[in-house]
Image (cartoon, rainbow, N blue to C red):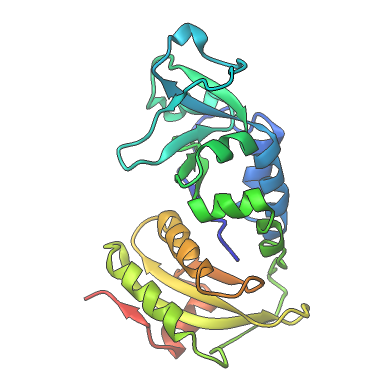
Length: 260
């Protein structure tokens, strides 16, 4: 299932990328086939997490004794910021002073924070929101099957239409979710297939949203995963001008959700 939803900010001077994980993050933002590699690196590379409740002299890489309690810094909305290097903490100059942190292997961090939403590199040009279900799929390995997709190139013929069986329950649930998201103006449904793949057509949702859709698609993906089959795929795209798939949604379908 397409749960890989990056947010990108306007580029400014930065040391990004500094390591292989950051290089794979950049590549995965535009290359679907690179996302499995990114998820693998995310699991096995060190991630930086801000901590509170201990002396700054204890910051950095240290071994925790059994039953040691660690408190992670969270945003007001409950999300936990994590970083691919210590320099990412200070991108854009939002954090100006040294802060206590810990370096942990991604897999260990995800185990400790199960049920929470993490935000990777929240101050950087490239970042990613990691939803609880996405993290669970990462830990159990199912995400590597879900992200095995074919990259669509300019020369690829795309077959798009309406699904043979309309997913009424999914549409109803998504419409309810979008109703609670003021930035979503409308949403559309289709079934899509490329001419060079043997896979069956899969669902694609077009969302007309004001601003970034990273948070919206993350929430929608986590919701959809609970309602579709284990091996099914669903993609979310932003409705944009001069895009043939967006044109299909706008010109040939009716929105299943329309903001009032």
